[in-house]
Image (cartoon, rainbow, N blue to C red; front, side):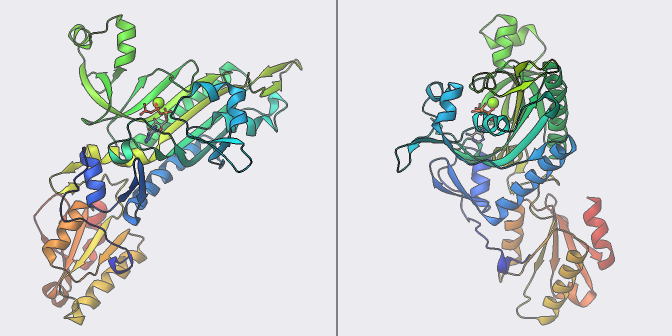
Length: 419
Ligand code: ATP
Ligand code: MG
């Protein structure tokens, strides 16, 4: 990829209407642009990071036998009336009518649609368990959309659903998802914690939340020094005490802020019973299926990762999420064809070795180019000018260090892989 065919949207100055660092850096580095309140366009740079998150999620869900599907985003009200949520959900549910005056909503979550989908083909316990997921756009008419993609109205969520013939089978799957989620957040290289949680609007019995620990989080967590602990809501219930300070002084925990990036629920028969998603069991008796649901905030993760990894220059991507591994910056290549050729050769060589490389071939000063890529958090920077092309080498620096060193061509891949 070259910047000549990869539009660059970096801002020189800080955007004015951003309250948190991730929102500021995502706008400034050219990852996203606002459409309207709580709605964002994803630019090529941002989309590459979003795709990396999705690849990791897909890998781990495939490993536990969860299959990908895709459901329509606009949902008919009839299903929501069957479950009883049409009246319960409140103004977060964006409702509208089609030309025939039929009522619809824009899906904030998909329990109704997936229950309807699976019940159509369901007859016997022998078909279960079934595990499906999708990665798709959700819409919630949030009362206070804020912090960019951390709390937006339109966002991408991974939602998985499981169907079982017994509570025991649901319990087993739930543990598998919990493990897969741990693996996903480890692979994303985030500092996270798992806490017991309230099930809120979705309903059901047992539930756990996954939080990225960050100062700008909206949720209160009581955590020990290894970041194990519980949510403030649960702590209040457990200790029968409303004053968090009193709970903190009783326990050896600290008050931390968390960004909720994942939430898993044991739904039981909350949806299958009213919606009549039934099977015949071993004794040919009808029974509603047991269900679980498992969400991950895909777009929110990108911002949460930035909240955890930044400095005064910009974003510091964890290896797992960086939109590119390495950037090649040339100096004055328009004036000197030898420089251009040298940079091209190295660029092609890295592409041939499957290194995720972008070549900044813009006509701009070295200082400005470096500043842009440090803002965008690319871990490895290769600089090629007159000296490098005549000595057949490159100058190398990392994102976080000002020290530049000259390295031989056959060392480049080793240096990139080693850091
Ligand atoms: P929150 O408490 O932050 O409003 P929630 O508990 O209502 O979230 P869930 O129904 O559990 O959300 O949805 C699953 C996941 O989707 C959440 O864990 C979160 O990561 C993500 N998510 C929910 N609402 C938003 C939003 N408005 N913007 C971005 N991501 C969201
Ligand atoms: Mg939740």
